[in-house]
Length: 168
Image 1 (tube, rainbow, N blue to C red):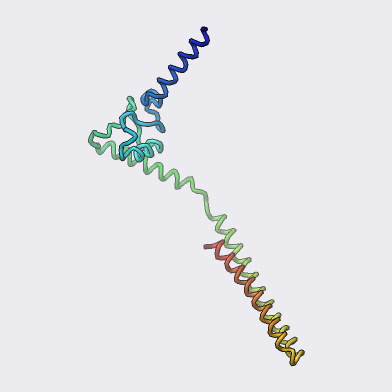
Image 2: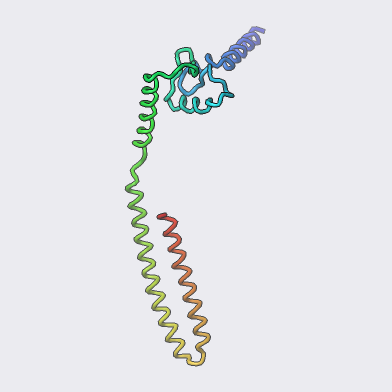
């Protein structure tokens, strides 16, 4: 019976704690202001600034949105916002290694494209030689040459598209 009574008291305390906004987050950054209703048009903006630490509740957990903005308060808020942005900028990783890797990949693809172009020229010359040796069977050789040229062109265009995706 005593455990049941303790359980009922604990559930009651948790309910009061959870449903009383000022008590639940006690004005700590990241909670919510007790005087900003959830249906207010600025609620999400105020919550966003609170979660980023730009706005800080009063000791009673209030925003006091109906009070005039003092220049001192504006200066403090702007200072916090600027520090927030500067921290995010400084936290950005150095992109130099990534750019170097991409540049090397681009050079490799460019080299591969040049090799394929040279191979295509050599293959075209071989097809021409076969065509001339066949004489009247030139129509078959032309079709073969066209197939080879189209196939290699597709490979070259595919590599070019891959290079485009990697670098742009």
